[in-house]
Amino acid sequence: MCNSFFRGDRVRLWHDRWCGDVILKDSFPALYACASNKAATINEVLVRENGGVDWRVTFVRNFNDWELDDVASFLGLLQSHLPSRMVDDRSWWKLKSNGIFDVRSMYSSLRESPTVVFPWKCIWHTKAPWRACFFVWTAAWQKILTCENLCKRGYYMTSWCCMCRCNGETVEHLLLHCPVVGVLWNWVLQAFGIHWVIPGTVADLLFSWWNGLGRHSSDIWNLVPACLMWTVWKERNQRTFEVPFISRRPPFPLEKSGVEFFTTLTICIKF
Image (tube, one colour):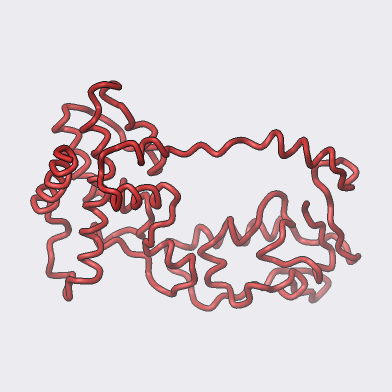
């Protein structure tokens, strides 16, 4: 079901599906977290003056430089969906050309829905500690409490990676693509004599990593993602909560983290 709006007094800006298949709070979670009025209707943020119509969405703070691309995309999407005339809003069933709901189209849509593919075997079928497995499971669902995810939950803070100190702290950046953490990934890959490109997401990495040395020779190999990500996360938390003057600490004590990683790996192998 989608909503066709003209006046906009019955359609919510952030929560309703009114601009194609997009729900704005899901497509722009960082902007939604900063919105002044999360329950605003379209009519409340449309300004009609001098014979024209324009958007006036307000936020509780100014945006950082790295957020401006999202702001531009958001405003561009809004601008492409300005109302053409002043009539009442209405709902439209998008699975039928006439816009009228029927059970048959709904049933067909449910049958054709793709199954969610998730790398559960790559997480729970290893011998890593349960705490590390649960952490990787949470990371694969993009739910660990990085600065970026805390901002999406409404906390007002700067998304800042305490490892490299030059990027926002997203799940993928912290665990996979941070240039400092990348040194640790490369170190491990070199230990196995493998040249590999880190995938874009945690889930993709787990899918690609599983049994990478063959089904009967990958027990230790399969442990690596959980042990390494868990090591990085503990280092991140120590830097965030336990080190009083973070600027005095080296960007990432590779020797310490490497020892901790291989200690965790050794414990898992013995287990």
